[in-house]
Image (cartoon, rainbow, N blue to C red; front, side, top):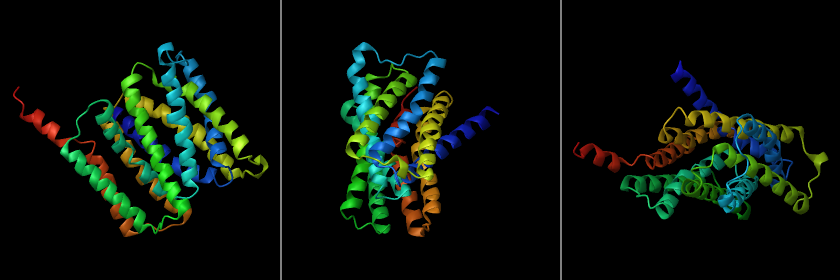
Length: 300
């Protein structure tokens, strides 16, 4: 029964994060990207705050980590989610998920730079396979990369880089901060900042926001953000970090299928093949084969 529950929770995370990309796509149909990102977090914040109060977790970072609080607010929540929303105005939801699946690779690179962790040959091979496949996917999708599409792809990759950097700096500087404290106040302040920036820069017309976009924002705030976070938090206690990290490899599969269904696109054999190779390459980066062989050969 415990194994069944864990499997169901794992599937829920994959589904909730896999549908996030389609939710963003629908939200930005009638809401500008800054405003959409701000509204999503403002919807999520009260539930995060309630979760923190129920668990009696502090919402303030330690005084010595106030700079880290600013870093998380800006580089994990504010800028990356604006970039994702902007990118999805020009790129399909499925391709966005595949682009963002590069994030664990950037984590590997930043870990080598900031944490002095070793990168093994098999991981380098996985990186090369993954990015070569990503290039072929973009080419096979017929993206000729005009200015709008190019900026969309760059924005999504930049968001993946910022998230990867935050994960590594968090491991280095914020390991003692609970995940609830880490998320609650930064998501509230980031939501307010993005929303105010949207009002000033984008001048959104709230009467023009479609019911579909409001529904997508509610889904993103309540289900994808809060629900996905809570389930992921539960899984952290049940699975090893390596196994759990494969969520980032699996959810793009759901995103591609769901996005293709919604957007009326056919999944070509070429796209499926390159996507499988891409995710396999990035999966290899999580499996340092040489390290395990060395341990197996080491004398007991």
